[in-house]
Length: 381
Image (cartoon, rainbow, N blue to C red):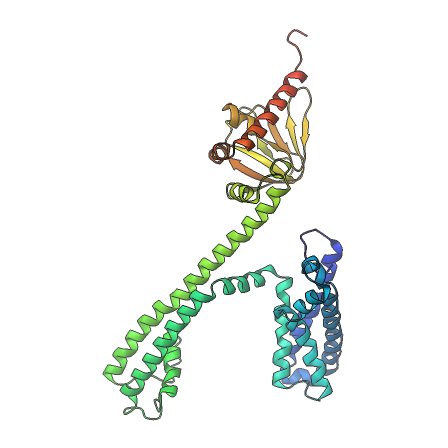
């Protein structure tokens, strides 16, 4: 109930909603408490929120410690090692540090010291469990750490060179503003970031010329991490989509006994499709451009004399591709359907690369054609 394993559960939804609400309350209380007028008006309410949420955080941490062997696969390690692994993990430290800071602050009468409040605000990281978007941000930062580090090193180098140059160029004209290189670094930061607060600016001709060059280089350098992050987000989203597709394909009976590498190759060729109820997926007489695998929902094949229902794990549309003929039947989504689509070009590629899969599809297609002919009325009857 506290860990998402991909299986829908209303109990997990209730637990997630409860802990999300406690985190939001905790953060809102920490932010609103800093408003001086709120301390006297809502001090009692804020105190009650802190106690209730802190206890909820402790319960959450204890539950996660207890269930750690389930999440860390205790078969490969002892239960104790699994629990210690969670306690020492980044999220385990955050889960414990937030309520611990509150209780220690109360015990030593320093509950609202800056250090304690900063630790308490780390509860925002707990939201990554319940909001996939936040988890995506941290995943991208971990993946792109090296190129981002290189970009940061380049920016720091530029900052040092620009600040040092401006110090030597402006110290005589503005001895108070550019009293030292550390003083000049504030100018360097706001200039490279193109913020330009205006509190420090060069007055000499050479200083202005140098500042113009720093501005142009700063703009170019700031574009580098933006490009790295954009590429990282695109790559991470593709990877997650691929993993989801791979798991869905592995559950289909036709692919269940294939190697993981083969499933991975096919997963790259399939496109997810969502079809609402009563929509036409394929129409009789149209040219075949794809075959479809049903993940969820039901589809109805309209053939004479009786329609056929297809459910999860089945597929259709392969006959038109194998025989290069128009569609022989209309298929309608009987419920909301989740499908995987394999285009005609990709289908031919799969048939060439994986002949055993092609043979399996051909056998099923032949069996379907045989059943269809057996159910057709004899001419003249």
